[in-house]
Length: 484
Picture 1 (cartoon, rainbow, N blue to C red):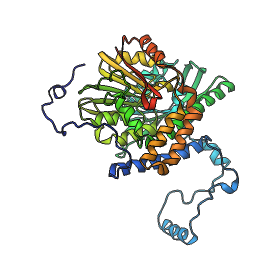
Picture 2: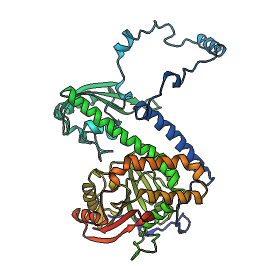
Picture 3: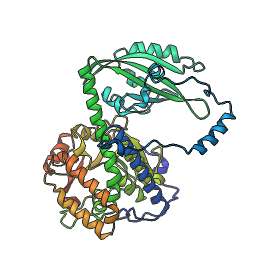
């Protein structure tokens, strides 16, 4: 893929000369950036706990006595604040007494406040900006890879697409007279749930200046029968549970692993900056000026390492979990950019199962670090990656293997934490990471050997295995690199 003159010639250099960074620094640094990141971790952990409780993914309180009591203002404080309110003509002060039966049931529930209701957001030009998990499940991930494209790319999937386009032309044709609320019925045949009908409500969302910012769209879906609806609810709750598990995992593993020696060694091994003594031949270093796909980038440790090398890499960091993506953006904040016209990190919310929308034949490397084992079937992903790589492009896959022994890995992690004198501080996080691995993730950890992974990459169209090892990450992980 052609690059700009700036990329090719580098006529102007504003960065300091590149320096070797053998390992990621531990999070114990007392810099302001580290403090801000720890504060965001704390806030995200609290929000995650609240969300898990709302989805009943954690045990409920054991009795009424354990519940948090209603907070009341002291009488004198409330009286004084009510006096201030009485001095103002505040709307609604003379409203009649609220009836839980009559008033609430008339209003009903607000769909977009419920994570079980499919919803998506469009900008003022009707381009796809984002969508929630419920939408992805109900509509077979039809928006995946289409962020930034016209909503028509999704409308084409509808059974009554032509009717919807006529309605949109009629109701949104005059930009000076846009509806505040647009309601229509859509029909869609789901691969999993068959024929569905939904009431679609598009709410006009104003920006701070009062102008139209975009459209929040909710879908009140009706399935063909109650068993199908219940199946949808089960599928959605399972998906939410997995997503919340990854969020909870991220909040802890990031603190634990970045405080060890073994994890930074793994990252440096993947990019060719470190090789164990027993390695037959080293994995080649990532070349300078490379365009790199960091697939399933997690909290951004690998993207940060690549950007920190100051070797003019353009890193596309793709991650679908919102908590992880928030941490990635905070961690890589000084390298973030919104285009690929120069070195830095582009943080993109994207499911790696669907890489639609990325430019083909334009990446020098694609890296999947501890990602493939979490995919139901990584082969379709590998095939898409092959199409995205340049003719000499290379894929690098690391992760657990059939002979992985969790006990040995976590014994090494424990030794590293004790050596750095951080075990007492990180004991709770360490136990959480250990429990999630052995109780939740373990069913996926032992799926393939090195030979299995090499076979899958060849099946995906990669012709030459450049490197392989089964002794990475304290001897418990494999790394396989293959060329297109």
